[in-house]
Picture 1 (tube, rainbow, N blue to C red):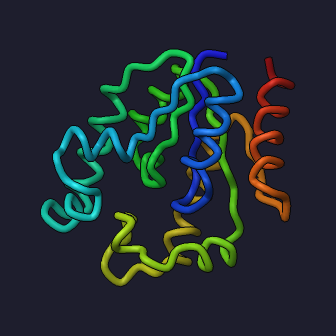
Picture 2 (picture 1 turned 135 degrees about the horizontal axis):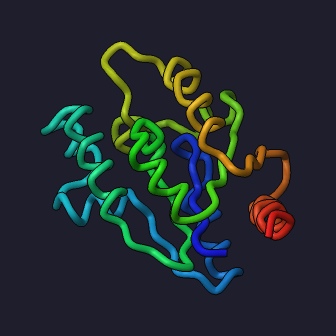
Length: 167
């Protein structure tokens, strides 16, 4: 299968699903947010605070473009879709799975937007961010898995089923 790249909004479950999916497939797991933090020596929120959003996006793009992976599940940061270069790189590395979550569920989950290091421009609401990103996720996705009322295990099983069906 090569690599599986998970995209979606913050709190859509990319890291959680990614770890379980990696175990199921016998793959390694990479979280690009952690890669960025390691490369930059700062938490995501600190990078945004000290370098601004554009500085953060540049650091994220550089980390994604430098990533080398084989047989990995890669959970990207929610803002990775802003970099066409990074997304084309991911497209060449494997299959891209969009973990789609509805806005109401997302709004309920994201209680600490700043602490999570979410790329939100001054004056931008979470709803505006959601509406801005969804078309990008849809554009780059090979597979879209919509969040339902099911359990985490059911979500992972759906991703696995959809990937297997495309093999």
